[in-house]
Image (cartoon, rainbow, N blue to C red; front, side, top):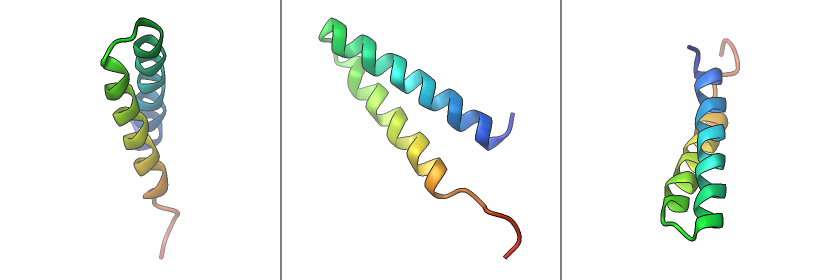
Length: 51
């Protein structure tokens, strides 16, 4: 599994947990938010080829 695939999986899980936590008024929404922030950090720190 590449980092790109892992990023998309983390983003999907974070989104699902965020939606579930928001709909159920559950604190799991904060975990979803943290996972979405982690996926964003992986996106921002990606390697763009040789330097």
